[in-house]
Image (tube, rainbow, N blue to C red):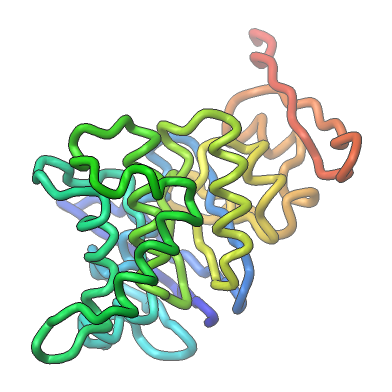
Length: 257
């Protein structure tokens, strides 16, 4: 499923946080959004998963305005993993994952046998089957993240929107999770903090600064030393990965002027 953002703007309390953003994620692509803290990445993604309505512009899924869809239809097409998730309630991990099946249940809202199978498969895919009966608030940050990703997979969406999905994960888990979502067969739009991970896993990157897209394209074309100095305020050295050839980045502070 294709995702298009056309001229999206967001104004809050008289401040323009996102300005005229145009973004395209083709079906099956892994598209990353990167930028410094406060650049508007999370605000932009909130418009895509319907937590925030743009002040101007439109977000489309295969040509349909996402904000014109019913809640059920929107949830069948798109699943999201926000950066902040409420975790005070005493649900088990299995019950949290089962919430991903709600858009697919009938009028009675009852779970079927296939729902349980899908949820169990989702937990297994993220390596969290052993957590099924654990109370969600008792899990570590990394365990919670795995369970929430399993919930999104159990939703069986055609688009996944992920806001910093590797938070709280160690490096092995980060690599596993990004490989997992990349291989899920859906369109992925993700805000990523780690530029090396973004370069290694994304087909296309959009660099956001001050609420605007300042560069876009394949990671090897976008992550130049000049752009990283301008946007992130660091000196970057690009080196090829010895096996994949993907660009890897080494950072230093910019020399004092």
